Length: 210
Ligand code: SF4
Image: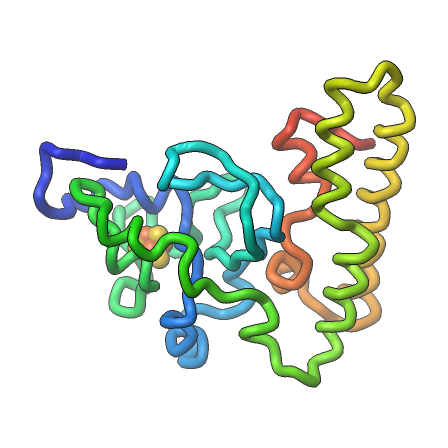
């Protein structure tokens, strides 16, 4: 991330293309004001692989995190206007974006993984979607998915593991479909509620479930 040749932002957009920020408690006012909405977010569930700038590598997350969603299958921040290389919410950008200086990442690194929010922090306590999140966590647990993926490289026969991954992927899809058709949740909102679809997580590991 460090770029010693600069001492100010030249708006190259490299940081925004690499991915949007993780949200901290300090960002809740921006959410309350509606500059960033739930539909703009994606949940990274505890244990999912994510790029950690502190070690410059993909690591399993030690906590649930909420990030600004990318564009399609890319991580490019959805608020990044690529044609003009600008941030469309610049005046209301989030804490990590305000601290980010590619030529001196110390300030940003000092807040990474600290005081971050989880889904329950920004959902009303009585919202029925909380029960759906709990059911999804129980039916499609990340730790089991990780163990199964790990098992693929060591097990003599992968058929049982793949069958279980297929079952979990179907469960994930069924819960999302139920939330959309029966509860009227939008597809956009479901990335915040349930995180990335399991099929997407598996495909990042080179596993495709039909
Ligand atoms: S919110 Fe703005 S500054 Fe932050 S990553 Fe997105 S486009 Fe870049």
